[in-house]
Image: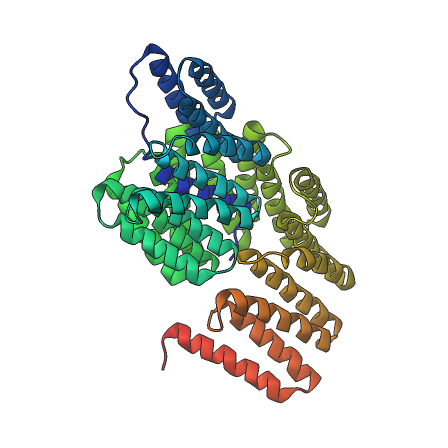
Length: 489
């Protein structure tokens, strides 16, 4: 199961912010510093409540106070404004704010080394959201060198940077390095009660890694540990508990435990409503996932209600041209394709494409995903040749990226294989399935359950071409994976 990248990015951002939340400002002494600190705190509260304009207003007031303070105070405000820009998809502005803040913090080492590490992690996260993997890696390496030189590796800041480095490794499809970085981060944080929330955040990211790699058992194990920490350490009405419930719901849905997964997502909705009100972005995220789940089980009326409410919330908070709005439109289009409401699905996909082209370059993965949805829409109408062209456009874009996005390319290749099969072009179907397998093996390894369906379909096409020996080889591989998943000898 794949989740919209916009939703996944928000979950990762929340996990990172949980770590950064342990940063505390120095005690205020002068009147300007007291006013500065108050505005910073009000800005962070407004940001947590998704009141972005109010947050910017408070930060601008804090910035005005820095005339009487130091440039380090100014850098802290720049960093906080950068988080607002990043959260609202204004990545270029976020980059500049974080970069300017880092430049200031670098001049004030070692006193500002913690701020340097935190802001470097924020800038790296921004680069990753833009899929700029190389600069993310460079900024993190520089920050890790600075922290290690001064304090060694066994400290909170280095653990935070390792958490981000693991996400860079994921983007490079380097699962081994990602798991090694996460493991070291967890070892550093250890069982220290003061780092328990940070440990929960890292466990969440490890679970999301395994979720995307279709290792659902590991994802459930890690997300369960994370949820238990949040429940033990935070009050019942804490926002991070709502996030943790939603994350656990996603994992259980992926494992096929629909009833429990939906139950947890509903709990997340209720808790977010209690904390932030009925009309918050936090509520919309859980509503979207509930809609996706309902649509997949054929409960279209229920799914439509969830999507409509989520869409109204997002329109009010982020406007008509936001990627968050496009995500809901794509969800609705996929649902409408499933229930043969082709005309409406067509309009929704066209509108989503228009929005995403305003936010991303033409060869971005978000554009590729819409081409895949368009291909599915065409295939559902039996327009095989057109569907193949749309899916190939998706593949051409998505295969440019590593990691989980490459799995999206593999899924589009599976779609192409099915289209060729329906046309009776079995050799072309085999070619598509083989390329899909190559991508899946590169990201997931040879014994992941995600390979079974593609191997089985490829075997059917090979039998149709008379290549029975190779078909049986694929069938054997599929059987071996199934036995390995069951733990059979």
